[in-house]
Image 1: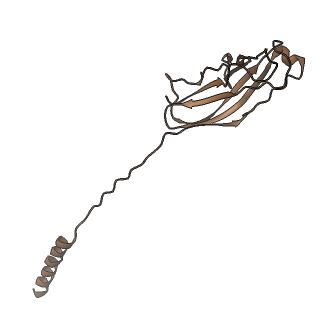
Image 2 (image 1 turned 90 degrees about the horizontal axis):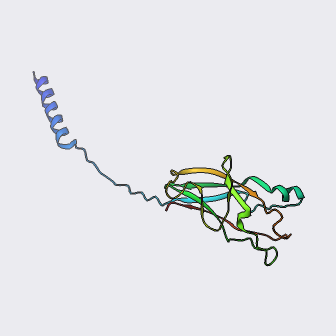
Image 3 (image 1 turned 180 degrees about the vertical axis):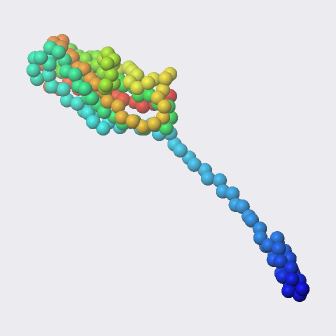
Length: 169
């Protein structure tokens, strides 16, 4: 009987010990994360295409450059891309005979959409401010059709900047 009492006493002491000393504590930590807006557009090929009308058939028919420029985009907000010429006319050539930016026409590669004449006013290339693309990453290519015909004098120094802009506005 003594053994049972000792055993019972020991259980009571252990239960009291666990009640008094067996506690749980919680520590709460808040993690704050800052994510900046990412709107990134990079040309990966065709940054400065050179077009040479070195045979008469090219002057007759123009030159089509499929995949003339390829770019990658990354955005964590809804976005769209525009294209425009850096000026209304090419630089170079013969004074008094400006060649307009509209000699270059563009479209997205892989589409059967008609080509759109380039101008110095922003034009929608991928979506637009009223209908934006979902955030994400990807690659797109642009086709050019260049057709000055016989309307401009010969020169080796015609040039025009083409400006691509990614925006979320």
